[in-house]
Length: 486
Image 1: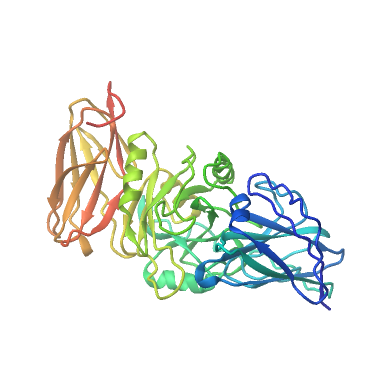
Image 2 (image 1 turned 180 degrees about the horizontal axis):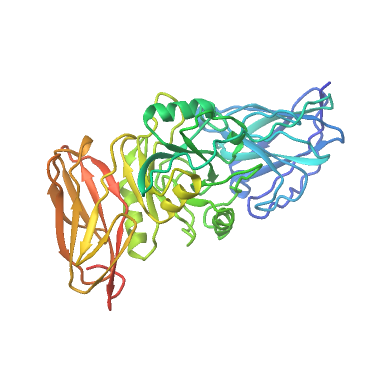
C-alpha cells in the first residue's frame, strides 16, 4: 500500500551543496508538493535537492513530477540520491532520468531504466531537480513521492556478457565501432538488445553505450556474441558533455555536477582514469544549452569528438584538436553517430580502431594510443596510411624517429567508397601541406622534409569536397629539434 510522504524543500548549489535556509515544508496528504524556481535560483544552484524521508522496511520508492514546459522555456531534470552527504563523487547516487520521464520507480526488485534496483536504506533521500532551463517568470514543479513496504523479489544482477576477446585475428586489425550510443536508459528509444541488433545490421563490431549520467544498461542482456559492448556514460555537466568508456560494475557512474569553469572537472577525469576508463570530450561546440565544452581540458583527457553523427565533421572541433596536438597533447580524435533512435543510421560517423583483438581492454588501449581513423560510415575499410623515413616505417598512432632535414614519405592506399575520385590532403602540424588525387588503382603519395618534431595526419575528401575520412596523427620525433614541425 503506497502512501504519500512528506517532502522537505531544500536548495543546494552544485559546488557547495549548502542547504537552503528556507524552513521545512511538508507536502499535504494526497496532494503534490509545489515548488517554485526562478532564473536567479537556477543561476545560484543548478541542482536543487528535495529531502524525502524513507522509512525502515521500505521496498519501493516512487517519484513523480510535473511542470509547465512553456514551449521549451522550462526544462527540469530528475535524479535520486540515497541518504548521506551530497559531496561530488559520493557513492550514494541511485539514478538519473534527466527530462525523459515524469515518473520513476526504485525498488528492491526493479527500477525504471536509468535507476538502480536494490535495497532502500532508511533515512533522508534526496530528489535532485536539475534546473536545465527556467523561463523568466519562473517555473512551478509539482512533486509527489510515495513508498511501499510490500514483499519484493530478489534484486536483479548485471546481465552476463560474452567472454572476451570476441575475435583474435593473429595480428593488429581494424575494428569498426561507434563510441556514442544511447538507449532508453536515458533519452534513447531502444533497449540495449535492440541497439545491439541495429549495430550488427549496420556492420559494426563494437559499440559504447553512453547514456546520460547512468550506466544501468548493464542490467540488460545484449544477446549478440559477435558484438563487443563497452559500458560507458555520457557525463552531462552544465558546462559540456563527455563520454567515459570502460566503466563496468554495479553503480559505476562518474558524477556530473560540475559547473563551467570549476577546477573540479579534474576530479571527474581522475575518477575515470582510476577505474581504467577513458574520458573523451563530446561535441565541444554544439549549439544547445550546456552542450558546448566550457571547462578546462585536463591532462587526463584521452580523446575529443571531432565528428558528431547528426552534424558530421565539426570544423571548430578539428581546429581545437589541432591546437591541442600542436601543444604536444596526444589526444585522440574520434567520431560517432550520437545515436538515439532508429530514424538515424548507426555508425554515421564511426571509428576504425587498430587493435590486437576485439576486447574492451584492447580497444580502449588502441584508442588511448591514437590508432584510430574517423569515418563517415560503418562499413568502408580504414585507409591505414604508411609513413616512411629512411628505413623506418610508422602507421597511425605511431611515433617515427628521424634526423633533421630527412625526407618523410606518406602513402595513402588506393581507396574505395565515398573518397574514390576525390582527394587526399596532408595536414602537417595543423596546417595544409599538400593534396593528391584518390583513385581505386593507385595510392596517393606525399614527400616532405621534416625540420622539427611534431605530427602529421591525413584527410580524405569526396569528389564534392566533403570530408569522409580523417586519420589520427603519426608523430615525428626529429633529433635535436623542438617539438613543432615547420
